[in-house]
Length: 111
Length: 114
Image (cartoon, rainbow over all chains, first blue to last red; front, side, top):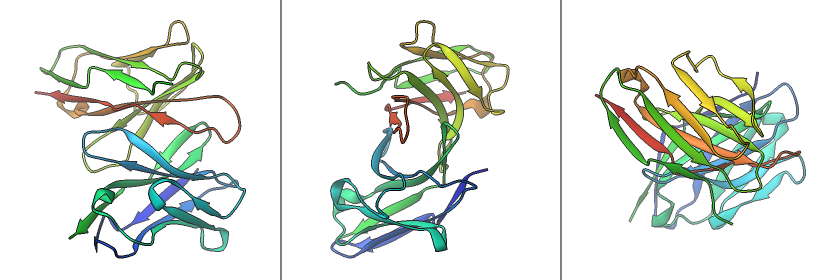
C-alpha cells in the first residue's frame, strides 16, 4: 500500500530564507506524487505534481520539488520565503484512484 | 471554468441529527471524491464515483454514511445519527478520468456536532 511521511509537523523560517519541507513515500509501483497547500478554513490547492517525467518539478508560487527514487523522497523547496507562504502543506501519493496524504507540515514565516 | 463548490460551508448540528452535504464538481469532470479531514491531520479518503457509479468506499465510511451521485453530476454525502466524532472538514474533489489525473478540491464543509 502507498503511504507518505512528512518529517516535521511544524517548520518556521524567516522571511527571505529557504523553505524545505520533507516528504518520504512508500509505494510498490512507480508513484504519482503531489504537494498541496491549504490556507486556513479553505480547501486544498495543488502546488505541483510528479508523474514520472522530469525529476525536478516546478510548481506555482515559486515552489519546486525533486523526486529522488534512491531516497524515496519528494521534498518541497522554495528559495526565498514570503509571508504569504504561511499555510499547511500536504504531500500525497496516488494509491489506486485515491490520494493518500501525509499528516501535513505547518509553515510559519517570521518577519 | 468554475471550480469545485460545496454547500454548506459550515454546519452545526446536535448529536443524533441527520445532515446532508452537497458537492458540485468541475463541469466536465467525471470522477468525484469525498475526503474527511480532522483537526491537525491530512485528509482521509472516504469514497469516489466515476460518473454515477460508486466504485470504492473506505472502511471509514460506516453504514451511517451514504453518498450518491444520481446523474453523474453533483453528489451528496449524508450522515445519519451524527456523533461527536463526525466533527470534521468534509472535502470534495473532482478529476477528469485518464492517466496522471489531478484532483481539484472544493473549499470543504466544516461540520460541528454538539
